[in-house]
Length: 456
Ligand code: PHE
Image (cartoon, rainbow, N blue to C red; front, side):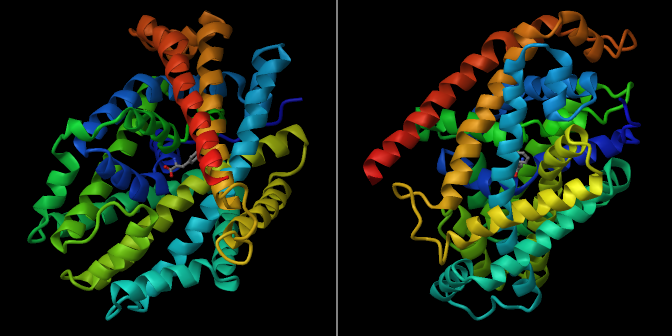
């Protein structure tokens, strides 16, 4: 039984939605921070190599699977192969979506709180200690983060209920250009700050001596997370592509946009940090504890702070809708439930697990597995294990399992496009991607075991 499937309506809509998924919290706070910590541009060069050699081919693989099967991540593998093993990608994808959206909602709730604080001019006159206290007491409290989390999930669900054309595409087409405008404004303000050059040097001056083999592993892991690879987001989005969508150029545009935004985020943050002599390597704290101190010191800081947290909220929202869509497509198609019902049920369930994540900073902080809170466990399980594992299976599926004819047909749009790089593409998905991912995966799992041993 084939129902009429929704689809994206335009090329720009596809790029906005897919880039909207890719560009998220991973780009705006995580990338600048880990790049800085790993020797700036030396790390960036390696990260770029991974994006090009592994990220883009795996992204193309997801799009091929999605558009060929025109199904949710679970149904896609059932459609393309009779072998039951591959369903595991679907199962892992749905599970990863659940976990990631739960902790994404927690960080989004902080972001919304800080957007409100920025509006209320709530950072001015606060000392660094006060700002640290402010963040800690907010993130550890019970009521307010949950209110924001519920609001964020409701907004996510509202967009997803609208469907592809009238929901996801419609809103990402507005939100993504808004994000670009905001980030450019922030960049201009940051770069023209006196003393800001130090930040630019920090981010772009290559210092290969700081690079360790851990940096290389981090670079590959982050390439996966930032491009939303390995859990079927792009299989699901690919299933809404039209016949004439160019899979190769779309993948390059999305990966390019994601990289540019990550670099622009670094350019907006580090000159500001350096101009005021703040500590650059603070991770999550950089955005919520260090930056607010600086906002009041820069010209136009009030507007800057509002726009910054608006940027972060928008980036989080366009990613969270893509994650919710993976599960909604799965439930509505596989279980024959209406889209609206499927979205509401899923959003409620994820809000509940998300609340548990949020409370793991406060009242539930005592529930720990060898030093890891529930939030940490969700994050590590999804990002360090499920995503790379999914990515590895996806590239093996394309490289070794799917009929070559299907791959050439999808990449060449059934004879209407010329795809010149088939040999290179096949080499990357057959050998390079699975082997590189396997190394990262083993290392990631090893690290978790070691951390557990140390903590335990
Ligand atoms: N790519 C998003 C980010 O950088 C996170 C994400 C991961 C979204 C996996 C969807 C799937 O924040």
